[in-house]
Amino acid sequence: MRKIESISVFDMLKIGVGPSSSHTLGPWRAALRWIDKLKAKNKFDSITDITVELYGSLSLTGKGHATDIAVLLGLEGLDPQRFPIEDIPKVIERIETTKKIQLNSETEIDFDSKSAIVFNKKFKEFHPNGITFRAKLNTGKRTSETYYSIGGGFVVQEERLRSKAKQEKLKEFPFPVQSGKELLAFCNTENLKISEVVMANEQSLASEEEIDFKLKQIWEVMLDSMYTGCHTEGTLPGGLNVRRRAFDTHKTLMGGRQYTTPEEWITAIRSTEVKFRQILKWVSCFALAVNEVNASLGRVVTAPTNGSAGVIPAVMMYYMVIENHDANFNDVKQFMLVAGEIGSLFKKGATISAAMGGCQAEIGVSSAMAAGALTELMGGTPEQVLIASEIAMEHHLGLTCDPIGGLVQIPCIERNAMGAIKAINACEMALDTDSRNAKVPLDKVIETMWQTAKDMNSKYKETSEGGLAVNVALSDC
Image (cartoon, rainbow, N blue to C red; front, side, top):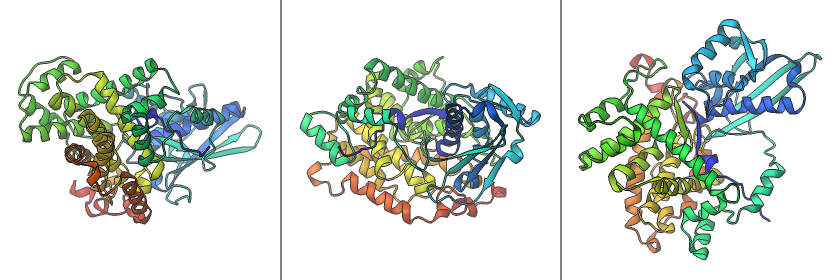
């Protein structure tokens, strides 16, 4: 049997904390994984001293992405999905004040974060986002493990060994998919929509009730991040003095309509004016809101990354408040299943890491995911779904990642609004396209994106060493 990487929708859509999936969520999860490994090897109780070394992109933009904070939270054993984000400052202040850390919230050891977390600009060969954990044991021995944050919160070690359990799950997949061509073949042979193919795969891993529960959790976080962003005024943290824009735009668009919950909010938005300009503003507002929450260490859904977290919820919300006022959870479910599958094709065939491929790997992929998902909701065929995804990515090819000050703010937040608009436009063009006339297969665009990623100069790959990051000085902000 040919090995095909098993990627669930819940691998592509993960609940986490901002501002970056690869630079915040990934290192956080790497620390948790290291703690688990120490426990499995019966070394955890013997630890007397810890150092953490961040390499390459994690070092160059680590401060701006709160990588050091994420490492501390992971070492404390806190859950990125559930830990109250409002308590993060208190934990960090305790660690920095006492110069002690509570490993896995169990064992306290001396830890001075200023010296124990080392920022090393050297790039490791395997991946630009390397992180090494080292520990000294009371036996005098030392132990270390290196992890790589490869985008979207995915964390691997260099050997990339699949567990036996993972292989068993893979064998259970009724529709193992490596490419768009294979996905279409299953749809045509079985007479299924893409969402139905994906659901069949997911049901080989979990019950429909479990799948629905997790998808509802994901949508609730997406909706909450839009709602929170639209109702929070002020300036984003980090020193760039970026004023939140979603609040002002939202206030103007709502025109004084009343509501008390996110659900009532959706109903209120449906009663607003929907001329073209207002639609553009609403979609942009939703996307900006999510990424303003992300930029302030808020809770968002990695989709497929934190830096691109606003595109998918903005396009889903567009469908709910503009296109279909009767939309419900079944529509959300269908949308997320398709989006997750499109994202997995890019993960398998290219990358979703900006440190590997620039912003085309984040905003480009999220736009492709949203375009394909919207197309199926709008009645498009499986072929048209892939055409929409191809169009969306084709017009993000070569997009660089050059965050000013290493912060996921400029130009990252605006790019989510642009990616969402492109996704909707790509959907409409795909719906008007006869698949027999399509010239560029999605698989070829994925291949091209990967070639472009490999050719791209490293200073445009989330290092803040080129582009806007160097041409716009912090003093300009």
